[in-house]
Length: 314
Image (cartoon, rainbow, N blue to C red; front, side):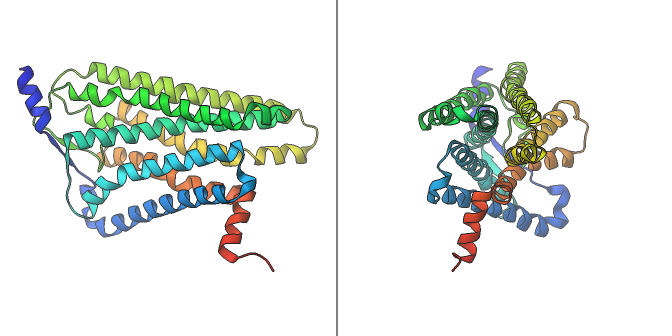
C-alpha cells in the first residue's frame, strides 16, 4: 500500500478550476486580474525605487516599508504563473511538485507579511512612546536582524507543509477550488488521515497570525495611552496621522486572513464562489492597496512621487 500511495503521489497533477461559474464574464475577469497584478507590481517597485533614491527616507520606518513592498511583490509573483495559465491560456493543469512549491511561497510570503506588520507596529510604538531613544533602539543593524528573524520564522513554519502533504497518498480527486495552490485546499484531497496536517496548520496560524495580531493590538493600546496623555488636540491628531498608513495596512491584511480562515473552517457548506472571493481578497488586495495607501498618506513619498510625475518646480 505504501508503494501504491507513493506512485500515485509522484504522478499526480492537479486541475486548477479558476472561475467556471463566471464563464460568461471571463473576458471581464481576466483584464481585471491583470490590472490588479499590474498595479500591485508597478506600485511596489515604485515604492522601492523612491525609498532607494530619496536619502531622507533611509530610516527604520521606510526600511520596514521596503520589506513590505518586496514581500508584496513576492505574493503577486507567486500566484501570477498559474492564474495566467488558467485564465489566459486555458491550461489548468499543475504538476504535483510545482503546486507544492507555489503553496510554500504563497504561505511563506503571507506569514512574512504578518511579521513585517508587527515590526512596523513596534517601530511606531518606539517613535511615539520613546522618541528620544528611537535612533538608539532601531539602529540599521537591529532592523536588519529583525528582517532576517521574520524571514527565518516564516521559513521554519511553512517548510514542513509540503513534506506533510507529500507523505500522503492522493487518489482520483485532483481538482482544486482556486487557480493557485493553497494548503487548506490541498488537504481536502488526500486519501489518508490529514489530522496532523490540519493540527499543524492550525498551530502555525495561531502562533503566527494570532500572536502577531495580539502584539500589534497591544502596541496600539500603548500608543493610544501615550497619545491621550498629550494635552494638545492638534498634537494628538498629528501623532495619530503617522499611524494611519500602518493601521490601514494591518486591516487590509488581517481582515481577509481572518475571513478566509473562518470560511474554510466554519463555512464548509458556503457556495464555492464565496471561498474564491475571500481568497482573492486575501491574496490580491493587500499587495495592490499597500503602495497606494503609503503613496497617499506618507508626505515624503507623496512629494517624491509628485516630483517624478510633474518634474521639479522652477
